Image (cartoon, rainbow, N blue to C red; front, side):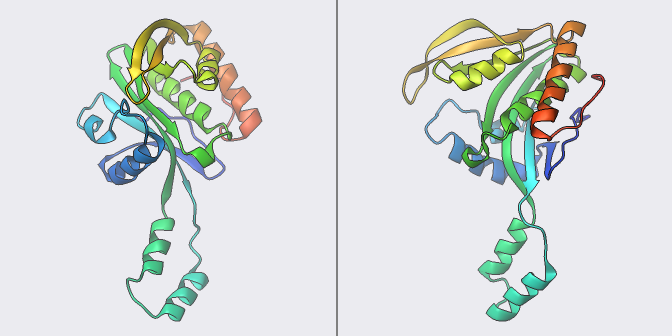
Length: 218
């Protein structure tokens, strides 16, 4: 499967999740959706070719041989906690993810989350951009999702990208019985929508410097 993802910069990158990411995604799901029993599990979705996650990851530890050797010499313990910590830190750290279901020309955002301390950096919007870009490149014509009716920040973001309210799911969230608003962006394959996305991508690039500016959607 082609990635159809925009290149990112400033230590962040995006990729399509694989089974190797299962443990880290599951841990992150438990943190982000600890009070939401409606969340969709990555373990259940990885079984299907038309269901996948886009991950936003970054390096949180750059290997420094001097420091590593110093710690090892001080502790003089092989396979110690410190060594495991160093090895685990010298890897991709998942900052957020967005799950997509794709059926022919229709798509659906099944899950969407960013670590709490990573919010306010444009990362959620970056993930939404990647999802839309990916689906458009695959020939999709629409994208739908559900959002808590009280999540005004998310609703405003979705409206910015052409989503509009098409319905309501009463008492959708089982932990507190809050209603969900159903939102859809139609005709995302149209030139008008592509131009809109292109403008928003470059606007995001100027503000957050996480994406290079692009001249067209491939």
